[in-house]
Image (cartoon, rainbow, N blue to C red; front, top):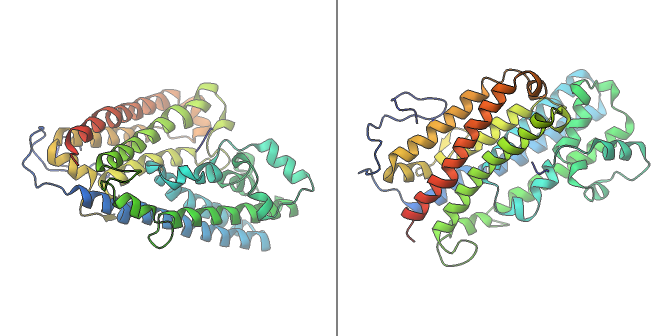
Length: 357
């Protein structure tokens, strides 16, 4: 990561639905409890998301262990699929990048990009120790998701199981164990029984830092949603696009970059509607906004759907699209920028005006 529209009809569109005929700012909807919005965000979205990342990473490690022991095509494909399965919840959680994931550098530890291929190749060619302890000292651009990706997919996604060398197997095992360890630390940092950051979020508004007021927390949440728009549109997509260099793509070896981007944006939906893996909270930021300003809620949802619609026009891998689908990319970036502006300006103004604690 580091580098390092509610349609105006009553039809459900791409994850959103509404049959409200009142899109004005003065609503008489049932008030939404701000505290419940916060609690449900932690219990329905944040904790389950982090739990899933760790669970998927453990499954990835199992697949990698099988590949190392028996380097067959089937085991290689299983490891590659497990890597993609782990990426999905990770990219989704980037819709709320605040707290330990930033404060303890879990994000750059696991997801720095682009991979420093030169450093990784140098490590592989050297006799330097590749134990997990040594591995954890490496810069983020030489470990984490993209180091694993490089070994199991190879340049251009051409890796064969029989191509994996003995040294690469050692590197792969340590890289995967390190990833599992970091995802566990991240999961535990929010868990009530250990790190308790989830409790910190739930007690927002009690006069204690970091969220003396609930307004402070809601602003951080809105800011995180806007930030991932900015990162996707102006960094992850823009850098390889502007330089016409596919090696700068986030997940270039697996050709998973566009999927990564879409999962980032889907993370915004998860946070805004308090929904994760089909489970929906009893209260949400969307419901809170709609109860006071239905037109803003509709605007956010409409713009979100517009982003997904534009992504659907990018039909080639991002590594190829930066050369031959440049208009589609630019239109997608413009849609993301529009959503980012609404989250940054309109949603923040709503929070400032309506969160009164």
